Image (cartoon, rainbow, N blue to C red; front, side, top):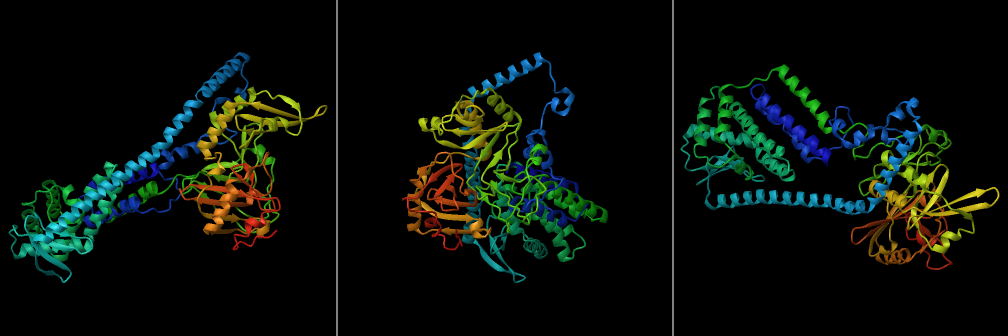
Length: 640
């Protein structure tokens, strides 16, 4: 939205400047036609295209972020990263740096509570701004419509039909109108004021002027201008552009009228306009609200029009070529998007470091390409299927809420393993924070001291009755399962003592991770007991049991949805997850309150589902498997 405001404002400023500079150098009708660029930009959602000409390459925060070295996990923003010779610091400098880092980390920890409260306040800001914009939009629309309806009723009350012009426009006379004008969008007509003393020649010129407005469609463009200023009421440049374009419309009408009547001497036409303006008392803004065009304008506008009638502009080929070239440049600057972003504003996934590329070899066996999935207008997943046995030329990744997720962790960085409830190619994906967030995670992880004990079938976790949060942490080859309450669980094999386990509580680390997941990915725990009043259920499947082909079906049968509600809201929590191919099927449940909950469904006989990495068993009885669930989606050929 901010990008659109920036580019549209820049386009309007350019057109305003062009309107002034080309005042006496180009045909007014051609200059008036240039305002069509503004209408298209403001009201028609055209697909964006990447171009290095786009102004967003300079001002787009996302583009700046992509260009920064912090975007890649292996990047360094300090001088030591740029020059290997500067990486080694003196011992006292290292101690000072570590002390500063630790102090900053402690300051971050004490600020988590404040951050949570501030986050809730910040999240309300978009809703408040949207409500404010909608109120202003409705208010402006109401004023314009009220003005048009009021004028229409007043005209119908005292008008007298005088005839028709060229069998296309009705001509009416009324009192108190002030100036001749063309009124109406769907049934336009010419209205004259009885007080204007026009002779036969002057009346013919006035009627020709209003008929030119009709031929140009200016009665429709008047309504379009009202729509533009109503939608963009908060932008004063839009109001200024609307007024300037209305004036350019009158200049174009003057030029078209003189050409239509074949007048070689514009003096009689100019005197007629001056006579029509003598009784005009309404400001330009008031005239615009009635969805109408007028033969006369204000004093400043009339001087501008009379001056152009005296010195008719001639369009030279050089001027025309320069104007078209400038318009092409400004279209590229304002219609295009920044290089490195897609039309939806989702950044291109950065590549993994060279270490990760060496550690992986991707082979895809899918025979068909999965469709891109969009969730909450922010989520898109990439499934680029290749021939079986061929090797991918770049690391596999998924764009989730505009952030790149990878299929392998970076050993020297704190990587967050998540299992988003979407149709995806792999069970696990890794989110690798960068910049200061990564530094804080490493500092907190380094200070954590594992408490290794003999493993007794995960007895430490079982005794505390802990529940998983849906994500794990990977750092330096060790995986930590994260449980509610800020507990991190890990295991390792000791040559003498066998399998060892550790359960350490680090609320600061877990709080920071959950904050990053929530703010950057929208990845949060889901309460399954909130699965109530389901209105629709859509199942997306692409697995070996569908022949690696993608299928989707939506059901709205109330009886079936009630059954799903009973199954899923009463499901039993499964400790330490499940690995049943839950990445290959996603069930999207839409609730009556508008909320959407997505479940990663198992594709084999296991009757379980995952919700952002937390797994549940939903079978109502032991003698039961997933076939009982998949049978309700009879359009999907699912067999196992």
